[in-house]
Length: 299
Image 1 (cartoon, rainbow, N blue to C red):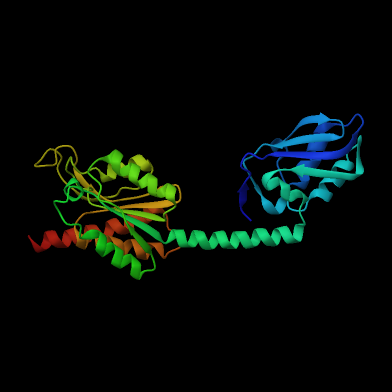
Image 2 (cartoon, rainbow, N blue to C red; image 1 turned 30 degrees about the vertical axis):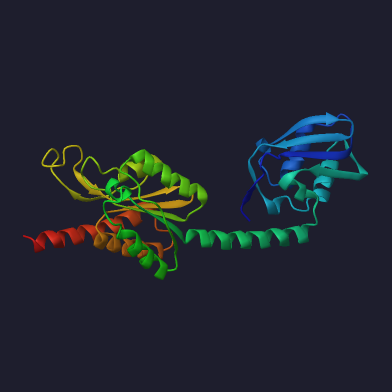
């Protein structure tokens, strides 16, 4: 089982203890061993009458290590010199830690069922995509968006659920905010088109790098800086990054190049364990070949 977030509910209270010159470090050792915690992750915070309170110093915990452990926990504490445990002793806690007192078999079955359900939800979310065409000319309605319908058709055939995002103007902060927003909504992938060129108005790669500074941005074609319109930038690039659990893919603007890159992306996603830089290079490679073919045809 994966670690579950305890959502700040980290206190574990043991009631019905009789302490007589007990070493609280040894008590914490016993509790840590039962709950499979590092000794540094548990701290005795209060002793009051027959009540001893411990705090677990971590954000998440593996459910299988705590479910139904009440009796084992009390027995382990009782084995510590100077600690007696009454017949009606009990463990109290809130949130995830309350599973300590639960019926182990029934609780684990419920958690396993919940994990299966969450796995199904994650699988479905991984197949959700939002598409953002970029370009002020698109946002202003001057130019028709032909990329988004083509992407939707291509990805739908491959089992993805595609949502249409609004056209985004050429502003890296505006684009990166839209990417972040969709990532927080849980989309499995964000695909942008356009704005990856070598002109000053092209801001999509910069936007992806704001959203994910470690994004992979391989070059598709390089120009001589300062010549023609390439005053500030000298390369056309694509990008593959990650924001939260969302993959971000920035493709060029021409529809034929979008579909070519998309084919490479879909093929790469079928290979388990392929890294984002490797996926980016797969996309870049097919686009480089296409541009070489175009250049050769016009030579």
